[in-house]
Image 1 (cartoon, rainbow, N blue to C red):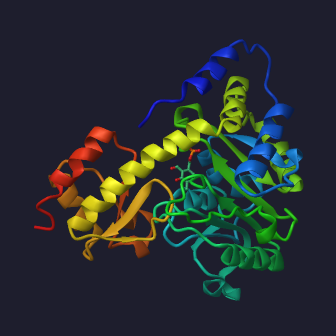
Image 2 (cartoon, rainbow, N blue to C red; image 1 turned 180 degrees about the vertical axis):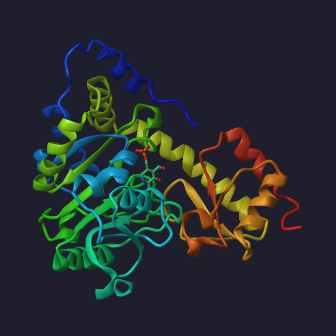
Amino acid sequence: MDPTPPLIQAALAAAANAPGYPLTHGTPPLREAVAHWFARRRGVPDLDPDGVLPTIGSKELVAWLPTLLGLGAGDVVVHPEVAYPTYDVGARLAGATPLPADGTLQVGPSTGRVRLVWVNSPGNPTGKVLGVGHLRKMVGWARSIGAVLVSDECYAELGWDGVRVPSLLDPEVCGGSHEGLLVVYSTSKQSNLAGYRAAFAAGDPVLVRRLLEVRKHAGMIVPWPIQEALRVALGDDEHVAEQRARYAVRREIVAAALVRAGFEIDHSEAGLYLWATLREPCWDTVARFADRGVLVAPGEFYGAAGARHVRVALTATDERIGRLADRLADLPE
Ligand SMILES: Cc1ncc(COP(=O)(O)O)c(C=O)c1O
């Protein structure tokens, strides 16, 4: 993991005097900064700052969103088939039913009332990017059944090989209305801020108001020094470009080592992971890596459809990444 950029550390230090309670909705300058960031970086020119909500990292929002929206028994939460596990956890915390499904066809009338649909683009663990057409279809479907559609886009700045990573809130995707839509975003990856818990949700101001009502009273408040650090981080594109360049180099090295060792790499067009397979059960591949001192995640951990893949992270140090090719030299024996 690389260090938190000095500019952001300085913003945190400058905001160290914080005797009062912070605004749960976030300071107006922070919400403006998020709206400007969407306009500058995500092709969303019309985000209403009232539709912005800072969150204590994005994981807590993923885990608690079904509960905050009042979902419960009999309600269904749809999430990607191969997915970050917290979508499933969140449905269960609310007493709702998680349903792994990538397409609308898998969701029949007998599955219960679908009230929340998650998409994750670029995806963890697969690195798959959903295009404008796919997202537009999801918007139409969610609106037709009255479900809230949420897109977790925390790897959006890490698209590779020129891939376009459209936001759910892009007018081309949502037709210019954010009604019923939210984007979840985190600076953990692009700004090396995982330890700050600095993230936000954005989209429909009506939904944000509903979340705010509960969060205010439940103490789910982002500390003001972190709001300041987040505001400054979102205003600076340079450190993100630098971090992205570091990952690009690591990605080339790891991908070449994997291909040389006989792996196929699927999707992985964006994000911090390579989704790789030796066409064998994932635990056998995990063991091969472990024997060589390398930790990878078993695909099965993200859903049954991942049972023959492993997720190889690009977050190791340059030195460890540099040694990877040597370590894999005798694979797949
Ligand atoms: C898809 C996805 N969503 C959300 C998160 C949570 O990020 P954070 O809680 O650090 O903002 C992660 C972290 O790995 C992730 O991969």
